[in-house]
Image 1 (cartoon, rainbow, N blue to C red):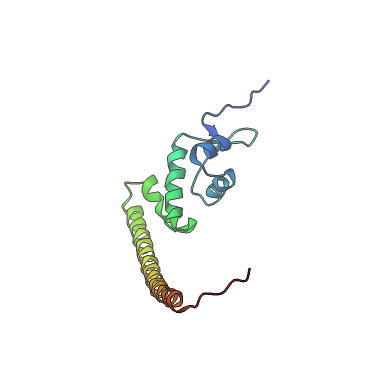
Image 2 (image 1 turned 60 degrees about the vertical axis):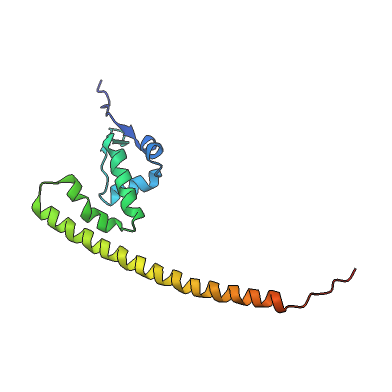
Length: 140
């Protein structure tokens, strides 16, 4: 009788618990080529312990506003650190993302500054209303 092969590593539920990332997101990461797993004969995903760090890195990159397409471009630098072509391509992608983030920050600062102007105007207006407003008589 043939035995089902046993794979070491954790299944998707355990990886999800250890990383705080939903199984659905983990499957998405695999579809995008950001994460890999091996499969049991029954088709269950199994991940190495290194997948925990990989998912953490992927989350950091997503949190920085990078798309899965950009992350796919950047990750080979981690996977193949000694390849000059990969390092150059990754550097270009990272610099493009840094520029995008700097641009986003500049726009957020402009929006905050505009909001500060409105807050000051509203504060002055509220102060004027509180000093000039006549008390409203309440009937008993």
